[in-house]
Image (tube, rainbow, N blue to C red; front, top):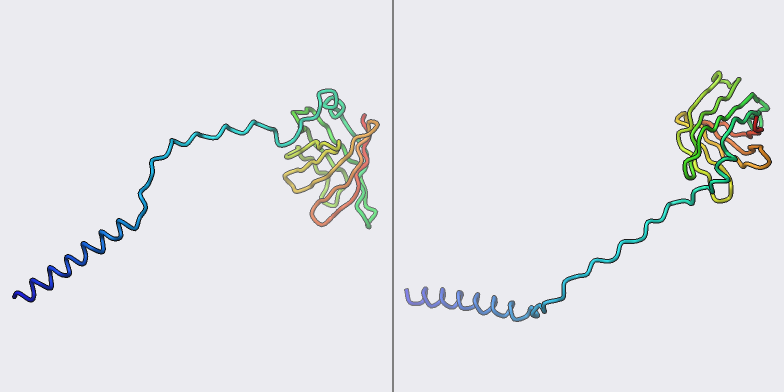
Length: 155
């Protein structure tokens, strides 16, 4: 029994020594000053809103023609811009005589970009980029597999 007790004490002593060495191997942690939160970043809009004078140039009714590249198929197009809010427009577009019939869609997403172009998307996946110059909107569109041009004048 003595040898059993001696071995148990040795094992227990060994465990205490290993645990003690492990504690000594870890450097003491110095108290640090409380972290000072970083100042919040200034709020910056993702895009620069169109100047107020330019906003009024966009509002109105535009009418013209769409033409599919390579096919020559074309028809009448209208875009009614009812409001400009920052760099976005509100309104609706109608494309007449398409292979899908006459399509009227409200503007779903839009952006007036810094270069003066207007990007418009509709929920039916039609999208186009137009440039406004001299009361005319000119640009390109994409709808499903079709691409083409849009030419519209302010009415």
